[in-house]
Amino acid sequence: MQSYKDRIAAYLKNEKAAVGMPISPKAFIILNLITLGAFTQVWAYHNFQKDQHYKKHPKLTAFVKCLFLPLTLITLLNYLEEAAKQLGSALKIPKNLIAFCYLLSLAVDIYSALMNNAISSSLRLTVWLCCGFVQFFMLVFVQLEINRINEELRPSVNLNKYKMNLRKYFAAIIFSFLFLASNLLISIFLKAMAQAVGRD
Image (cartoon, rainbow, N blue to C red; front, side, top):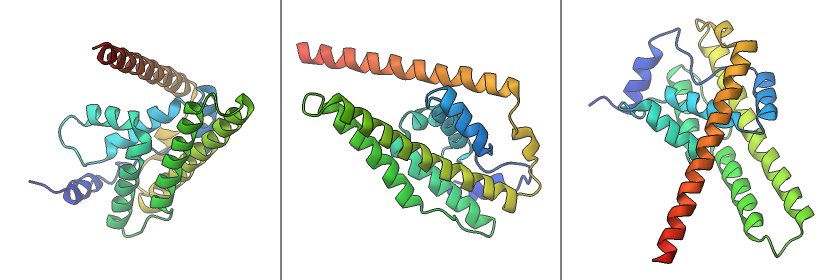
């Protein structure tokens, strides 16, 4: 059976295949502002599809992994590190620190929400904003590294096809809100399941 590293090597043999999802930081920021952060999951979905860890059902796997991005971000960083290594370079961002900061900020955000009656609403809002900024900028650093890998190590990749136009912006916004709707449906389903178990 072909190993994970071998699958990445086979993927990289196609010199026109990009590593991850190259997108300008400007477009990344604009789309996240417009969609209130929902674009993050579209971004993660496209990046996880490029990971060669799973041969079967890559789209389904990418969808599941993007729903749990705080836990799966490290696997995306591992993929970028391996791709950079095979291209003769190295990952130039602290992957463990980025993954830890992203997960920690989410944990703090959730904790403040659970302590609803113990802290003031203004403090909860401040915590939510600070944690949101930390999570957002961690992903900006990841995007900058994806762009660097493709620009420096994959010169044969046509990065022009990844440039955003009005049609692509519109499609990205639609898919972002579809992901958001799927999250809401999943949370409603899980809440209903929890209530059903509680009644039993």
